[in-house]
Image (cartoon, rainbow, N blue to C red; front, side, top):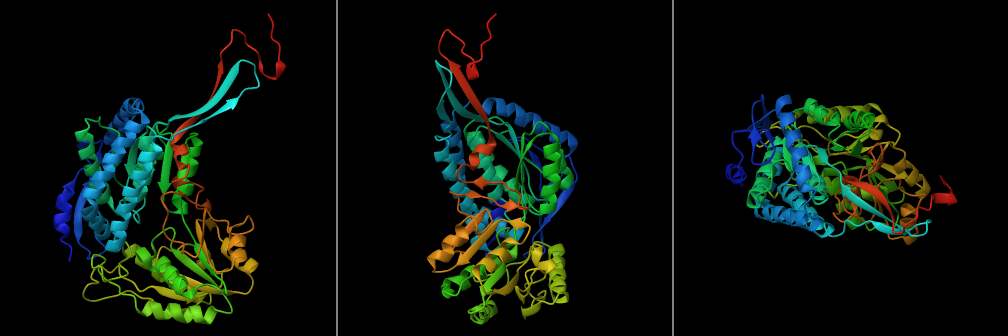
Length: 510
């Protein structure tokens, strides 16, 4: 079994930690919030809540550091990110163990999340030499035009408990190489992960004699987040969380003409066609539904199964569920860990009750586990429910291991069922039919930001832009050209003559 105390020590986590930091300088004048592990119910440690005065110190430091950081050549900024990635390699195991212990996901997933941080750092290093614009021909004689991108400023990051480190690093790695400084408000359900990441950054900052303010953390509940969303010194807010939260953040930021990058809820479906490879289908659906105890925004919520293979898929999946091992996520023999807290357990129980009341047939029963090893009260059984797509509970996202299965007879019907929810994050089709696959990927197919073929809905490829449409928020993070949102765009026209011809042939003689 993992020695979590040793891991905490390696990461510089103490019994009480300053929850506000601008780098090597930190502040701890506020009240404390405790971090409880859903693994065993223990108090891991506490962090201080950021006060209004401390927040102001953070913003001043971040704004000051930005003026210096933006002057450094992008490849040099990339090298700093490279060094941070190397530190993450050094601390991969203790940080992954902390992620698992504080959040409750399996150790494999905790280590995998840190690997995502390493991967995005590697991606950002290469990108730091590719922040390119383009040149254009001008309609005016003796002129040329080009586009370029400049650092944006201070980037505010609001992250969620389910990916307590990776989502932050998706943003920071790109923001840093773009020349921005970052202020991070971590989830109050996983604050120690933020302290650990900041401690690792501090090693890089010290070794390179970097100023305070490039990486900052603040801690507390939604009221701390409101300080950022209403602050016009922060041109971009990147927020990951519920649709309800995103609606509030988006409207507040828009009111001050700031930019929002919103990564919100998902209600993800897999369409299973008659000629699907069922071996990989079952594996993809199983992990998608129960991985992270169903607490991924990309978790599989719905299986839309062709009527000809419905019974076979149903039976194979139900059988696979009986083989799941639920328990301490730090024990690698277990498949499913706990939900984040008892409030999440209550939502899980209410969702099952609601599904039953609407006519759902519970195929694999749920419930809260009790006894030795389950003392935290956060361990639940993954559930499969036969349902109709139009049920209210099916249309909503429940952050828990509840999978709804339903039939279809025609692919157009299946695509319509998949798309007829308010969320538009991830989707998948399991098929060996090229026509069905291409239809699913066409303009008439999936309306989600992510559409996969023969791979499940959960997880993200670093090289591609991650995000979704509709009530998922429309934001894009990580790969492709997602870097552009962290920069301001500028069009330039240069006159290299002694004359001033005007556009559209306009004459303005004095």
